[in-house]
Image 1 (cartoon, rainbow, N blue to C red):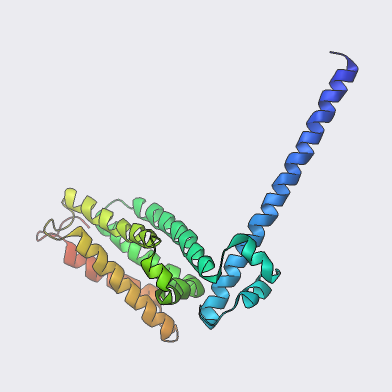
Image 2: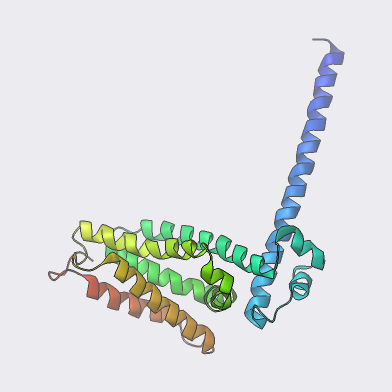
Length: 225
């Protein structure tokens, strides 16, 4: 290979590298802007309510122009639904990883309950949006996005079924009923905490609730806890 051809190849690689870096920087900037919009939406929906908060307020909180939001989301309702979709995907993955890290079904259920209420306490704005504001969205109540919520609650049902197969939990109870009962109880506790001034410690509440549920699900002989 001649020096000229070697130099040309080197120059081509340099241009390709620069172009790749430019595209990467643009993608990072886009992702950062979208993330800022989502974070701002969580803050404004939690503070002002979904119906009261405006796109202009969300844009100001995110540090972008009003029209920029419409580059990423079709409407304020679409922003709420996409927020729910992405956050629930993240929360379900985290819950599943935490639960799978436990050895027995009682430990899995305790961990799920503790994690759920810890997440509420750690990020009350997000919890307020997911628990309070979405219930006021008629589109959400009709949408397939509810499957995300079902997938999150299924982490409980899977732990119960696994525990029954191993003899760790009462085989006569319905995993579906247990799933709905635990999720419903946690949802009500979180809602009461959010609307009641957020004064009590959800960590203590989680420990108590976890023990009640687990004790009631053990086999007559006590199982393995």
